[in-house]
Length: 198
Image 1 (cartoon, rainbow, N blue to C red):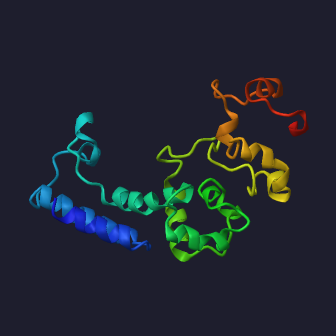
Image 2: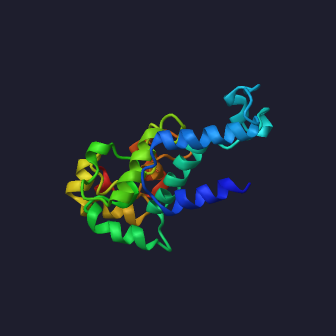
Image 3: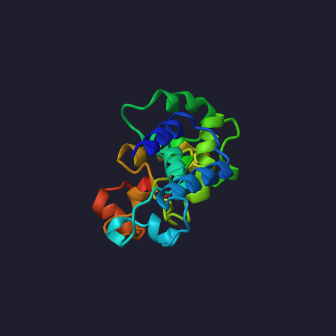
């Protein structure tokens, strides 16, 4: 209760790479304290598991570090009260929208991003699949200024009707059934003009 908030303060305020051996050293110190320098009698998985799952809820320093580096990245999706650091990244992202950065493969991201944002994205890339944070449908990808959808990157004005009517991300096309709707269903449910058939 005393040490962990101090660690989290540094993890959150200093978005820099912390060497894995340092995180392991911190974890080892936690374990030595818990077991009073004796041999552990319970597996680490049990120690780290949540109390509701039969564990002891011991903090996993590496996961706390990873989470503290990833949390600010959610601000890339902010539509109101956008943090200043996101606004500062806009010129470095152009023409890609900052909200697309999390969902793009690293090779398609701009190389001119700030070192802090690049670090956060590296941590995100290392845990997004193993922690179940990534959907194969990439629902939060925008349809314009998205390298994975070249027509929206080359001709963003061609999709202005869709964006103006709330179809700015891939998830907006998935209606109730969680499957991509047919053109007829889209026209009936959203009154899409025939000119938007693309």
